[in-house]
Image (cartoon, rainbow, N blue to C red; front, top):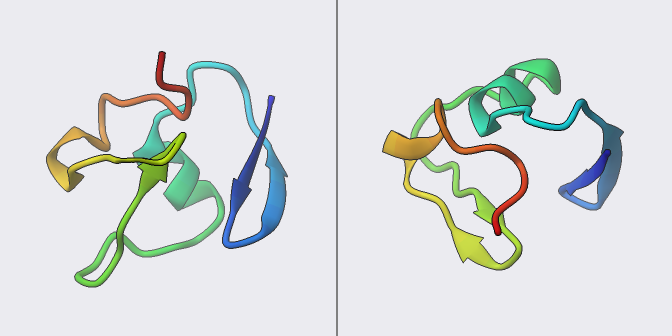
Length: 55
């Protein structure tokens, strides 16, 4: 599966969580980071469980 992060394309396995993706691409989950999946903002408290695909 391919995902775009900051206009860069990454290949990840289906079921990859947001937290795992951020770790893989070496983006620190510090203050000032916002994550949206399919134009839906995902709260930081959900990053450990939310996959990179929303239904």
